[in-house]
Image (cartoon, rainbow, N blue to C red; front, top):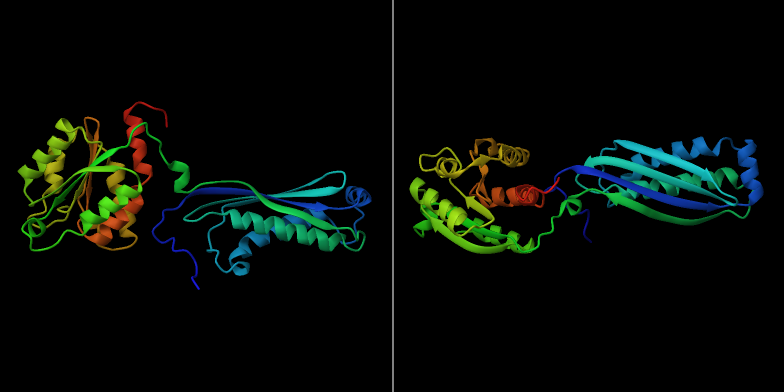
Amino acid sequence: MDGMFDVGHKQGTYRIAKAQAILQVKPETITLIKEGKTPKGDVFEAAKVAGTLAVKKTPDLLPYCHPLPIDNVTIHVSLNHDSLEITAETETVWKTGIEMESLTAVSIAALSIYDMLKPVDDSLVIESVKLLNKKGGKSDFKQEFDKKLQAAILITSDSISSGEKSDQSGKIIVQRLEKLEIDVVESKIIPDDVNQIESLLKQFCDEQKIDLVLTCGGTGVGPRDMTPEATIKVLEKQVTGVAEMLRNYGQQRVPFSMLSRGLTGIRGNSLIVNLPGSTNAVNDAMDSLFPGILHIFKMMENEKH
C-alpha cells in the first residue's frame, strides 16, 4: 500500500480552505442555547476550542495527511431555527492543501456540540460535512494563452557535443515542457563556446521569435563554463528574481546550488533562462519555474498582474 504523497519537490504557497458542518436539533434546543441553559456549558466556545485543536491534530487522526504549519484558524457557529451551522476557515503557507484540516475542524466541533446537547435532545443529527471552497497551490497560477508557447533548448557541453556523454537533461526538459503543452521547436547541442552560444541565442530570439529559450549547462565556475558570459551579452533586461529563486530552491536540496551563475532575462519578446546541466538540478529547476514563470509573457503583453 502506498503512503503519503511526495510533496518534497513542491514550493510553499499561500493556501486557504473553508468547510461547513450542519447539526440538526430541535427548535427548543436552539432556545436553550440562546438562553445559556445547556447543561454542559457554552457550546460556542467549546466548538471553537474543539475545532482549533482538531486542526492541529489532523495528521494524527488522518494517516495520509502531512503535518503543516497553521497560520490561522477561524471557527464560527451560527444558529438557525432547527440547526447549527459550523464553519472553519484555515490558512497556511505550505506545499500541500489545508482542506482536510478545515473538514476535520468542523467535524470535531460538530461532535463536541453533539456531546454537549445529547442530554437535552435525542434527535441530534450531523446532517452534512462539506468543503465550501479552497485556494492555493500551483493550479491557481496556471496561465491561459491564445496560442501555444514555443520553446527552444540549447545544451552547452563539450562532452555531450563530442559524443563522449549522452544528453539526459535535455530529454527531461522536453518531457516536462510537453506536459505543460509548450511546443519544443528547436533543440541543439553545442560545445561550451561563448560565440556559438551567443549566436544561437540571438537566432532563437531575433530571427525565430521563440517565446522561451532554456539553456542547459555551463553555469558553474569551471574554465569552460561560459553560458552566463554569452547570455549577458544578449539580454536587454535581467529578471534577477528568477535566477535567485532557482538557486534558493536548489540550495534547500543540494549545498552546491549556490555555485551556479545562471542568469535569466528578456531579449525582445523572448525569455532566456540558464539552467544547470545535471539531471537532478534540471528536475528541480523545472519544478520551481512552472507555472509561475509563464506569467512573464502576460506581463510582456502589458496585461495586469
